[in-house]
Image 1 (cartoon, one colour):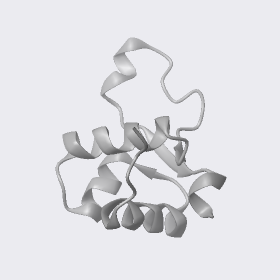
Image 2: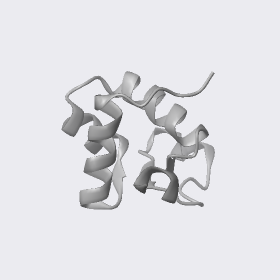
Image 3: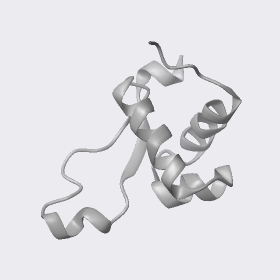
Length: 78
């Protein structure tokens, strides 16, 4: 089933376009939603190829609590 791009996701793209790279918490603050729901949306957008997480952000298991950083892909800029 293809991912539906609604106004909420378009607003997320606008924030990423404006700031280039944002953490999960920063995106959640711009959106006003919960961090847990935001993580689910971000994961779906990443799997669909709309956003990216720069490689090498987490080096150990302890780093799991740190925020991911996200940016746009060329798919989301068209």
